[in-house]
Image (cartoon, rainbow, N blue to C red; front, top):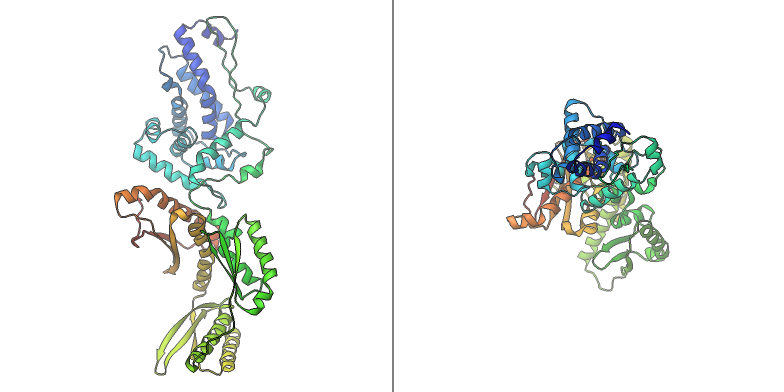
Amino acid sequence: MTRKAEHILNMRPRQWKQQIIIQDNIDEWYLLAILLTGDSGLAERLLDRTLDQVRDTWSFPSRERFSLKPIIKEYRKYHRNNDINYKPIDSSVLLTRLGLLDEKARVAFLLKYYYGFSYKKIAQYLPISVRKTKQIIYASLILWTKNGKLVSIHDIEDVIKKDVSLLKSMMPVNQVLEKKHLYIETRTSRGKAPVIIFILLILFVGGSINQEIIGKTRVSLGPDVYKVYKEGGVLQLGKEIQEKGYTDIYTYPDVENNTLYVQLATPESIENKEEVTSIIESYLKERDMDYQLRYEEINQVVDVELTEEQKAENKRMDMEQEIFELVTSTPYYYTQSYISDQNGESRQLIFSESITEEEETNLKEEIKNIIKKYDLEWDFSFGKVDSGVVEMERAMWDIVRALLEAYMFGEQKYQVYDVYPTYEDDQLKIEIYTELAYATEEDRAKNVDTVKELNRSLHFFLQHEDIQSQFNYVPYEIKIYDINRKEIEFDT
């Protein structure tokens, strides 16, 4: 008989009950130690330290004493005196990211989203104020993403519990015993029957579980803008069709009626209807989007007799459209502006300073040929702007479709009606205009979580490595406006 068993046999009834309570909690202590450290060896040492503190206590404490407080206390005490290098839990991308949190935030996050504790109870465990607890937990949420894959905040608890459950079930019982996990022998007043309490949870090694499922587990707030950006949404469909050479076919969605309108602008586009329909259906199917197609054929025949003035105006518009399509097809184009001079107004076409003299000359000649073809006068000049500004402009409008899709179509609760990016003074600014009420305390209480979700998911998107690289790592700021076009302020 071991000394531990002899000690238990000699205990008084109150101590038997105390030992049973320890038994009931030992698996949870070890589980929490694993989640807090990612290290099975360190978790066992913390468990030993915890048992040393509680098992020889003569007085019988409340069950609250034997919940999670002892292991948390030992973890924080050990953390203060030693450097803990969190070891990644390879079976879960989600749990691995616990290592990015500091020790207090790690405890708070798990108590909230795995154990389901209230903010008040978490505050008592740490111990800190309730307000500070909320701040720590909310600040930790920004870490719950990888490669832009996100899930709603409402799914955090379910996702964590699924990952932990999967982690627990990885090793058979006999393998756990072979690794000599901690056990407790105990006796009741009826005899000497030993009870072995074993732990099913160990670190996963080797990658034999369903990595495809776990790889899709990411936690964050708000919609997955990056996914929309990379995989494409219904708003990007129009760009896809244009890039395939069908420049006279346009699409626009009506989410409320679940309808995608396909606009056929020329007789030639009607001839390509079947081919484009195949492209659209394939595009929607790949992205699991379900829209009913409705076609709009624009009548090219003008039945009403136009005045000479109307004909002249249409002619000029056709010419300017052709020039616009020409200049925007170059990688150097930036914008247009009007310049007033003695002869009236003229158009200035602004390009990147990286345009070569040869390309500039050729472009000017092509514009002059278009003007000559229409037999009209059209004053224009070329302006230059820093090449970085042009690249930033293209990058900004490249992400706008994804932002609009995510907030206007994918998540209508955000009530976004406009997204406007600008680049000034070497800084990117994203302005989001919403119809959310935020003027009164009642409005703020109702919409504060929605606004925070929107703000944080924007940060996730803009902080992604691909997006940062595209914008050359320039600083950025996000401004969100309420229904009165007043900027919504966030607590620092």
